[in-house]
Image 1 (cartoon, helix red, strand yellow):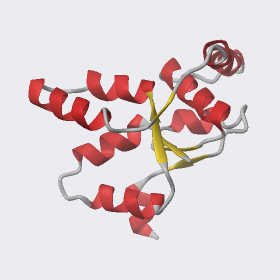
Image 2 (cartoon, one colour; image 1 turned 60 degrees about the horizontal axis):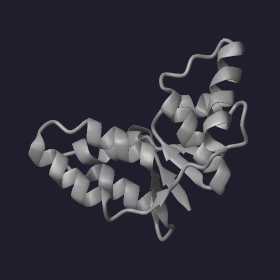
Image 3 (tube, helix red, strand yellow; image 1 turned 90 degrees about the vertical axis):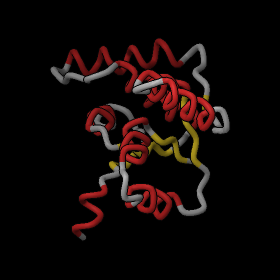
Length: 138
């Protein structure tokens, strides 16, 4: 199961050529992908107008979600705390929550956000940076 981060969805939705969506489909293959409610929150808050909000809300209502548990919150805070104490800055504590959800469910995290690479240095999270530019250079 692959937990797809908001950073990947933004790249897919913004791409007018369809090349990101194609690369995403190739990467996912036949594997199941899921989102977290944090992805839902981030995507909806980024809507530019009512029409986009409605399209996003409709699409997101059909997706599968991994839900936070009572352990998610303190463990995500612990990730943030440990990184901060070691001098590493995370751009969003939401990324710590998403990473913790992936850990709790044993999901593979697909992203295009360097915060998850930082988190992977202190937590055994299976993750991959989805970078279309890197894929097309190979």
